[in-house]
Length: 272
Image (cartoon, rainbow, N blue to C red; front, side, top):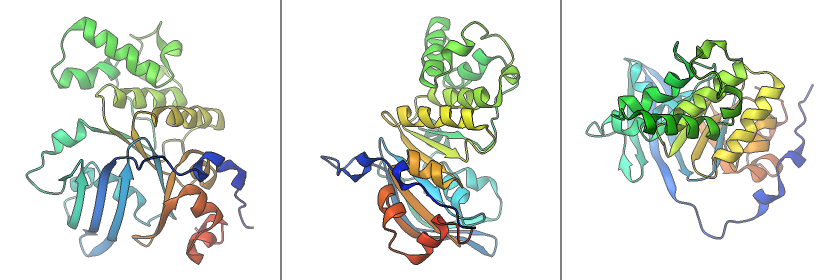
């Protein structure tokens, strides 16, 4: 049975052209990536702009998460990986070995499929990053913790239990805590790999509302299998298939007027 996308979910404001193009944060040109002999990403060209949500959709194994992990160079943790082409962040090629990965990760936060709080208190989960970057002043740390938790829409739920272990939070709360942990290092970009796939519908809605609020200040890239979610929250959508980008455009155009038949087939549920 075909899945039907309610195109009313793609809000009217996506039809409006912005007064000025937003600044390009990431620009990917001719990216190829191999896991050993497997050609996982093929000639990827796309840019990611500030204060927008970019959704990456496609069937399992199409390269979505691999591409996301190249944006903060986590993919290099796999020993057999090799790449060609370039990804520039703020005009500098992050794949150049002279580019320090530590510098990149202070500007690019990551939220994973399953919430992964540290086995520490709620407070220490947030303060950990700033401490690593040399902030020791207790008053400053307190301010960062509160600001980050407020930014992730969870302060009111945890403000009286900051010394409790983060594992005592619900799944949805843990995921918002992980987002707050990202905010604490004051990134420019937040990468999200299926951030709601392990959550219930109510928690998913909270995360989606949070994403809409966060994009006022951050570039957000989200990998999702959920077509409804991509339609609801993203400004642009990239459709990946077999390691290639089939189509990349404004979300309303992807869902209403796809240029490639394969895009329409995937969105309508004919495969994937």
